[in-house]
Every structure is written in structure tokens, then in C-alpha cells.
Length: 130
Picture: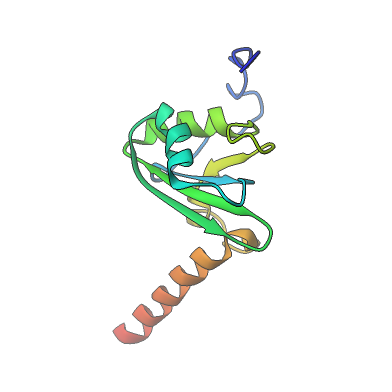
């Protein structure tokens, strides 16, 4: 990739928030609909050893959760992959996959099914303990 090395100064406290990773899991959005497990692994494993890859499809988007073995790998991967064309089909987005650990959790519509799943599990747990 030509000119990919000129972004060394980006993200070093220049108004961008520091990444707050709670666990070494990243979210990648804007992927090709027919993305394959081993394509994701091929790109992401450049940044460190991977524990798990979970590809999800919504109406509007194909996205994937990648869990690395260490937080540092996930941080490097997010910085390298966000706003890149690593999968050849347009710009992808990368972010920590731990949004629900901060804020109210409202407005995370595109993350839908995963959060709903977690909320259901929480609710049933609460009723049982009463």
C-alpha cells in the first residue's frame, strides 16, 4: 500500500480520545457482505495473535468482532484498520467493541442483536435472584 507509512503522528493526543479498551476485542464495520473468516484472520493477525472472530450481518452492514489475545494487539489493530481499505471494498471502521461499558447504552442501534442478547440475559438473572 503506497503512502501508508505517513500517519505516524496521528492519534497522539491531538484532540482524539485515547482508546479505552476494557477487553482486547475490536469491532470492524463496513465490511464486504461476503467476507470470509480467514480473510478477517489474514488481515487482523498481522497485529497479533487472535482468540476469536465473530462475523455479524445486519440489514445495512456487515461487521465483525475480533478478539485478540492481548489488549495491545487490539489497540494497534484499531489504529491501523480504522478508515483504511484493508478489505479492498471501501473504507472500513474500527473501534473498541466495548461501547456498552460506558454511557447509557442508548443509541447503539447498529450493534443491536448483541446488546439485546445481553440485556435479556441480565433481566432473567435479576428476576431469579429476587
